[in-house]
Length: 108
Image (cartoon, rainbow, N blue to C red; front, side):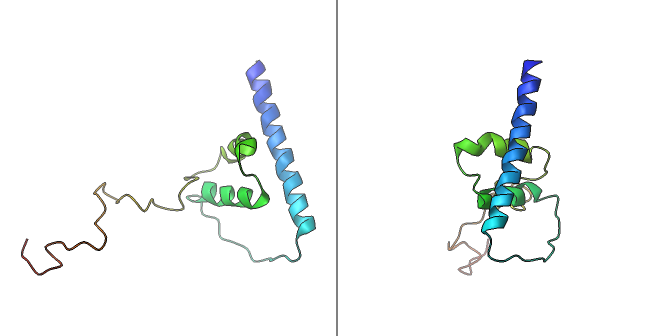
């Protein structure tokens, strides 16, 4: 029971931090853009993490806050889209700048 209360307290604290940070950012802003961005559920976690970092939620002090705010979002917080170091079928990435048999004219 106690862990449920502390989890709700942490979540409430996270939302309070978010509202205060948005208000501070709005007061300090010199201009605003009203262009609407498309929502992509596959990159929602990454996009929101970048937004939180722009608000100043950086470091271990805000780790719990970021965790509570992003727990229901989909996608990866570290990568926007597909990871660049992995292939779709699990093959190893091709060497960059290497001279393989197909590059120097030799038959494979």
